[in-house]
Image 1 (cartoon, one colour):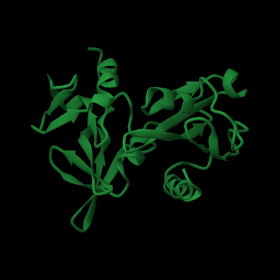
Image 2: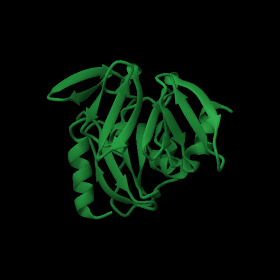
Image 3: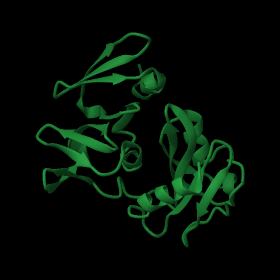
Image 4: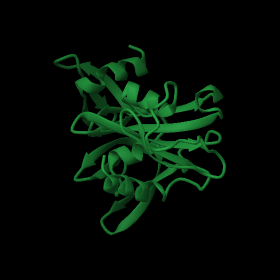
Length: 216
């Protein structure tokens, strides 16, 4: 991950997190960037190895976004971490971690705003059926509306509740409440039939995680 990529990531996330958020960016072994806040400082330095038990370690180990309270035995102070692996062409390259002094309110906001033609519409998260990567933007589908959000799927994943939304494919995140049926598919994968009739694949990469999360 080069400095330009880190700068681009920081420009995106600065718009969404409050001032009391520390941000860490890592590759798969060590931290590359750290911005502390006045509320919580883990004293991370670029080049420090990723500690076992940290939010970044959990995200990289499981290959999925995690939201987790981390006890003080890892960094000396407790914190609430939201960490998401950075994946390029199916390969995990690192992780980005938001560090809070305590668990933030769900989603930071309860709405996602999509653009339809020349207008913008706020949509409650619980109305979203699925999100799909399309041309570096995210297509958002509800029962009554569909439009685009300017952030890509991985960026938006940070703000979705893991108990409602689940990544099932590099191009899809689905709302579990709108899954109507899970069908077996070839090569140990699955096909989701959503309540609006959309058919969404669960890729082999996410199949095991998907089964564990839904308990089957």
